[in-house]
Image (cartoon, rainbow, N blue to C red; front, top):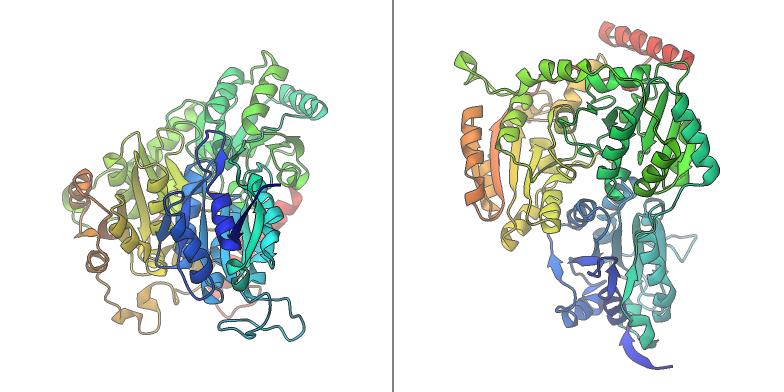
Length: 611
């Protein structure tokens, strides 16, 4: 057997640089790295030596480097991913939140944190977590609940089994998620005679699982018997590249489609079968269809509570639930009849099984009524209202008017996910990028950068509130340094406006959310435009919707990140549409408002139990 002598770190880098996707391009689009004593000598040297084979990017925070990598993978439809390496200790634990985000969203991410010395010679090494009852524990064990595969590289030859398992996990349609290879820092530097065959280029193909014949026949029979079916499009539609297949399936069988946060843009917003977003942040048109549906066909959705209205949305007592999903875990949720298969392949097979079946016509007037009710909210203010403090809905309208067919609008947490889900009109697949599986504040800036790296030809607009911007903005400097161009629209409502409204909606007093209602918060005076400029971005503060539109018109002329800051009113939200969301209200309170909300909450719980 022919061998090559390499350090373990060199072997890892050599291996990951020759793993290809089915298009024949490297599966990993690069490695994000912040070096410390746990990875600089081993992985740092190996990455330097292979800098022509695989690109290393330097970020400013381990969590946000992961966010950029996750957004890259999501926008690539999981066909490509990135790796992130950190030192041991806080560098590693900074990545745990991002690992959870990738896990919830079923997205590939290769995490390479440094670890303690396998030989235990210097124990306790700087930043080492010591467990007094288990000598094998390190800080990296924090990753175990939030990754799909975990391994600790204690010997150089461990890579021979760990690396193929890692890539098999990241490229498996059902098991896809983050992988953590905790890399002991002394082992990184140890040499081993690796088989040369281990480094032969390998293609990881997207496995497309077909439907089981029995399941397919059962589901087809349920659909044929339905009088009011509806399709819920989830993120799996995008991951399997099934947007066109979904449209063809819906058109052939006349079944209306509604979209989850992850599934939005599966159909163009103006397609006559697209009844809009569903659930807690859904359109009245979509929720009306779901409320009366006797068959709900989920395609690539995990039926999160925002999608299902905390399982209170489907009111028809005869309702049957079908889940077309590549993952068995999701396919049987809440007693669903499973159709475990790839969305692209499964929709084609289901079409064949249904033949000429056509569903009874839905109420097509619902779509028009919905747009008639919400379009005025996004219109540019006129007359005496033109200089009033803008609403988030008006900001979204301005951004929509400045967008094109290739625009990707993105966000993550706070006010914007709900408003964008209801109001944004996505013209094509992949035009809506929302991290709402984990609802992770701080994803936005780094995520926008990752999206632009994944699809540099597209116009990327990041919608972020002041609270989320303050959580994590350091990769704005990275984007400026790298000359990555995207637009950030930063809505400053001076606090956590979304949670303040939720607090009020559950009977609570306004407390500790808006800066004005927090201890000494009124003293806060943050100049976000000046901050963005200091980070290297082009920035501008505007006060009106007209000024915002003028600022957005300049975006194509600007190289690098462009930040437009606008003050907004923290109180208005889109009252139209939506659905109940189960947020527990205290049973005991001295305040009348809380007791009233508790009574209403208890009534909702009883209604759900009866349904």
